Image (tube, rainbow, N blue to C red):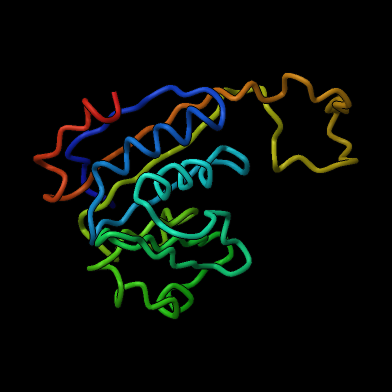
Length: 186
């Protein structure tokens, strides 16, 4: 069981621009050695938040979902830490996580892991866990097309996702105990 967070905060954003802007504000809190876990449904905005973080960190390369390559290193310029961007969605065993060898670069990088909950927390006692959620009523990514469950078929997707998101941040470990997220994330 995970310990209690040292602090929690949340923010409401609208659209990809708002999500990226919050990511940029979050990046001001990050430094080399930080582990950040991103969770949320498919299409919730995890990668969009990562784009805002990467842009504010000044990393090179386009931040996109690393689903098929699993992990990407985005080098930074000007003495800032690199960003390691991982998609752990398809990783299911500790051996698969170990094979990424994230420990070897964690001290000099910010490591951001999408779908990492329950998989990478052991990498660091100090971490941020960020949950990106959208209001109920959007599309359910688990829905099965043609399933005979009495569900209605939706053909007009206008308004299915109005772009509003809640981004909840929980900080764990002594690294975050003295950090006040209010000015940057509030």
